[in-house]
Length: 452
Image (cartoon, rainbow, N blue to C red):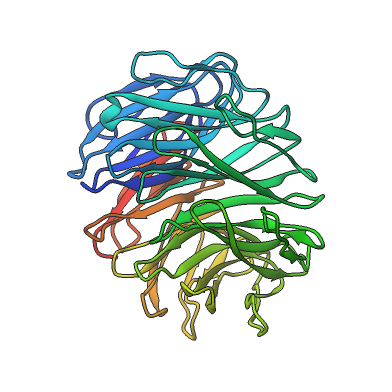
């Protein structure tokens, strides 16, 4: 499925509910047709970027699109569905007097500059839940969100200056130590404020990925820079130092926000953790990219990996008890990044992102080279439950940037992939042809795999 208009449209995340309906979050500019079928559902943005949430039914029929926006720019970078089929999404906004209620009511919010928001709407946009916003006079970003088994919402991001993270009457001010500090905020299922934890250095630190585990523990991944960075957001201390300009971190918090541990990985160059997933056994998987040589064993041992070029893709596995399991790496001489990840019900892992030039996607002794058609192409790799290589799908066209930015698996084991594409792309990389041409600068794609 593809949709879009004559301007730029971006998909950032995808999720499915317990009935295997699929939801995509993103942003669009101008007028776009969101119905990927034979019908038409044109929407026009109020500013230079508005939020969209698209629902595709389990039978692949188009359901609806909700749009939210103001006179400036907004983005929805994360989306998830709770146990009651409510749809939650998060990102950032910059408009004044922006209405976050897509159901016909009104809930006006004004950004200080670029602020973080968390929104909740009812099934099929039947009711409006709430929107919580917070930010400073700087750039504050919400990158991803997760929902626990009790329908509490957790958002990961970064912030500048001083931010009151409590959108209710009380105040919970946090001040960044440097350019950007990492932040994790909990909003309770009823919309009341839970807590916020922040940490960082006098450089830039970001919490980019977030997931909840079986006991509703919270896992956060991202990047940090600096010496003696205290990752314990409570009264204790847990100092870590980056080896280079940016290192990777993986943090575990209890549901009440209390600190458990942080693992760090990296080398002397730039290394970044993006998104993470938890399998049915409670193992944690983190993907992202790294440069040069990096040590991926966060313990007393070492596990050095060297990138083949500009930057390579990594997949780290940490056992549920926090012990290091292994790291797989993939790439070639170009820029290759793991940007999103999902685990299916049998423990297979799917990572996706973008690559450039020729990249070897088999992290083992074999070789599975793919070559990009244009500037950057999209990929999705399967790693089997036992850690063996399960194959890759790669696709793209002559455009500058075809990228996969969201992946999820439903209850039936189907895998859904979303992202953006330019020009004409053949979306069937298995020897067939399913070529689609973007209506404008960039359009959105949604691919379903039922037998990877």
